[in-house]
Image (cartoon, rainbow, N blue to C red):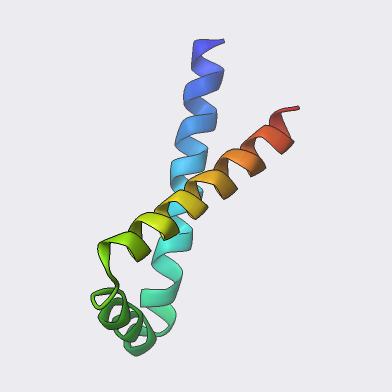
Length: 66
């Protein structure tokens, strides 16, 4: 059971890294523009985006596990 968890966790990390690498690979200028805009966000806006991302991920995970 534990090895199955690690296979799943490593697969999820691999997919995350693939997704994170797509934009900088395909369009470095757009990636740079996104980060320049993100630097101007307030702490509250960043926290809200983090919370929304966390809740979306948990929802998707619960949907697929049930």
